[in-house]
Image 1 (cartoon, rainbow, N blue to C red):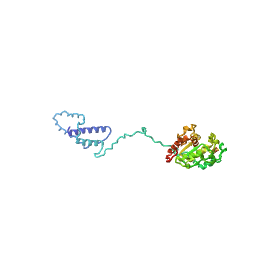
Image 2 (cartoon, protein in one colour):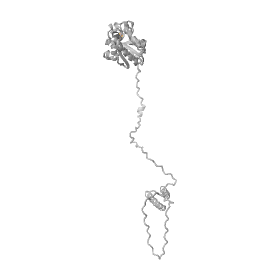
Image 3 (tube, protein in one colour):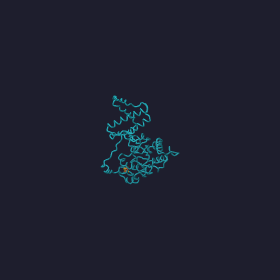
Image 4 (cartoon, rainbow, N blue to C red):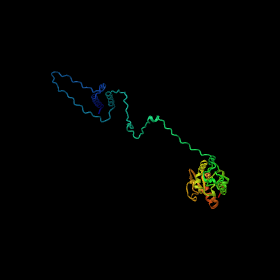
Amino acid sequence: MSARAELRDLVRQIRTEIEWAQRIGIVIDPPREMPVEAAPKPPPKPRASTPTPPPRTTPPPPPMQRPSGPPSPEAMAAREAARAAVFGLANNATPPPRIEPDRDFKPSFDRGSTPVPTRLPMSRLETPLPATPLPPPPPEPPSLEAVRADLGDCTRCKLHKTRKNIVFGVGNPNAELMFIGEGPGADEDIQGEPFVGDAGALLTKMIEAMGFKRSDVYIANIVKCRPPNNRDPEPDEIDACEPFLRAQIATVKPRIIVTLGKPASHLLLRTNQPITSLRGNWSRYLDIPVMPTFHPAYILREPAQKRPVWNDLQAVVRALGRSLPERGGG
Ligand code: SF4
């Protein structure tokens, strides 16, 4: 198609658009500078004597068809000029910006899983929180002197009737290792200090073999008065005296406790298992590791038990992260 034919086709399209614009109420002026095909000159008026020729009929225009090929530059320019004339846009006017759809937009009623912030009612914000009293701080453990003063000249159980001295305890008040026996013997009752007889001498040797001095550890018994004839303490006697042992443990805060013999092991571990099955097996008193072992007095009677006891004490040394002295006991 020639450029002239394209231009003619565009003129037809523009006219059609103008007609449609006028039909829908858009009042526009026709393009003034639109290139229009020159109208044919009217034929000269015939003379009177000349018969009138039949009216010339103009064939209907062919249906509008889009050009098959790309429009020429002239046709494009004419198209834009015609659109500007139809829709009132100047040639250099900036077209309105194109509004891109927001693909992520969701209506307020479809927020999916997005949490919707909620507002606390003002009544709650303005109401002061009820004052919750803080729990009282845990009481500090009393000093060993205070525990001893509380014990006083104790008559809480029947053992007070036969005792000579109350055997409270001895050693470092900040010891990391604590030994607990069952009760004072005859020598302890006389001197007022635990483990000072033959059994006490053996215990001192074992302590030193572990790399400690006797004054480094703390030594106590579950009852502070000597049971008659070196018998085991009875339950009512233990019940009466145990609070003072608990106070001693709470004050010293040892890292490890070694229970010596059956009564002390049964009391702290709350068990009736034979000492032969308890010995050498770690247990706990509250949160403190406990190593049960035989009483030194038993070792004096059964020297063959010295080796397993020494094995138990070596385990204690390792648990404390210490090393045995070069010439450890055996
Ligand atoms: S054994 Fe304990 S409770 Fe009993 S009289 Fe002696 S100190 Fe008091």
